[in-house]
Image (cartoon, rainbow, N blue to C red; front, side):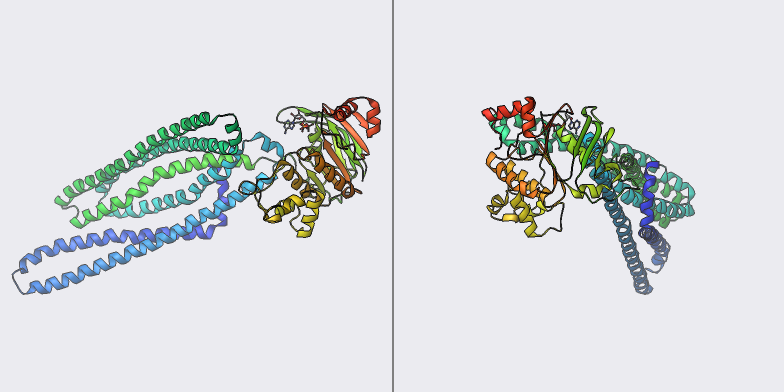
Length: 598
Ligand SMILES: Nc1ncnc2c1ncn2[C@@H]1O[C@H](COP(=O)(O)OP(=O)(O)OP(=O)(O)O)[C@@H](O)[C@H]1O
């Protein structure tokens, strides 16, 4: 329960709704207990007047008696209806207040979690599976909502109902009260256990369902591989197996469900029977009236649902506490990359210095950068070349402060990145990543993702600079074409160029391109490099690549291996070194590697 205490701040936030809900609960219960009281009065009235009726049944008074008695009964009938309507109305208001409050809390909680996700660093996302991250914002939150909504509502209704009804019952006959209430705690316990079983089975079904969904999803996205490797049969078998497991669990749950309802009805029936049996004896002994007996039967029925809900509420609270514990642990995680309280603003000029930088990925222990030193002056163009896994992308990640180095410092315009405002850093550096990601949105919105204020003209200019304008205008909807899952399928090269346009539109002084031309053909690559040459004139650019752009006059080319610089210089200097660069160049020249850009 202590894990749920953090939710009190929400109850406080919605205190008026909560209070209104509680008041409506009490009013609704008060109106509902008038009904058994009136039923008792009708029964007692009937019983008392039956004898009088027999005495006058042969006289003229009979008609008057009939007419008067019908009026009394009609009055009670109307009153019963009015009280039922009033009770129902306040029940409606109670649900409106408490359930609506729970939806507000659910909304706030989801936003709080999503905001926290946005604050966390890359390392967190590498360490957690997408499914886990999703289930926090969906399943955990909806379980917590069951606590702040239905559980609170049922619990308060149960408490008020118990207090009011049991008071009225004891007032009539304490012994009968004891007898009739005695089976109810067993009922609550049974519900609690059965609910647990149902919940366990539902959980299993849920995970089997998500397994089926992911198999289906993989089959759709990997349909080309499946067909070309003739694995349709295999995939069907795989799916059938998962479906079979799901069916077995669903049938088992249906059996439990089917038993649950009739067993409850049986237990409720037994309770009523016990009330009538013991109450009947009390009536014969003259301890209570027939009206009291009728009243009691209604009280027992009224208490049934509150007792049933004790079991339900207990398991709802238990599940909510487990989910809230997970949420609390998550919300307590502090991002490793954050703005210091004294973080400084910066107007980036473009000088970059890596000073004795060493970096090891925290969750894998892989040392990607070792004692690395590099100075890039404002306006310089630097190429970073190296084998796969040599640490090139890691350098880019360190420069945009996705990670902080364990040793040394990355300096921008003479200031350690850790002392600068993160948003300044990231809005003023354009980073075009190796793995392109486009949102399911129009091409225009994808290009101006980091600069929502950019106008159509700026979007077109960026697309032109990234040599993708012609391709875009070729689509029927042009720049309004929706890309992504439900939109147009773009080629790898088109996606890369849209991603480059997204970087160029920011018009920053410092750009980092991480191998972002790997999927475009040599001719387009040449065109982009031609455009970039003019665009990058006064800007600092770090271009990570595994191909040699002989066309591009770099101020400095560094060759990286195992996180260290092994060669450095201009194109000609590196050729004369006769090392990795010269070997790569020779290979490209001879055509072994067709990717030389000249
Ligand atoms: N997110 C990560 N978590 C853990 N280890 C990583 C991560 N990213 C890269 N590495 C490891 O760090 C080393 C350097 O990787 P990096 O991606 O920087 O190389 P790269 O030169 O850019 O390679 P490529 O040309 O294939 O993109 C590799 O050994 C890689 O396995």
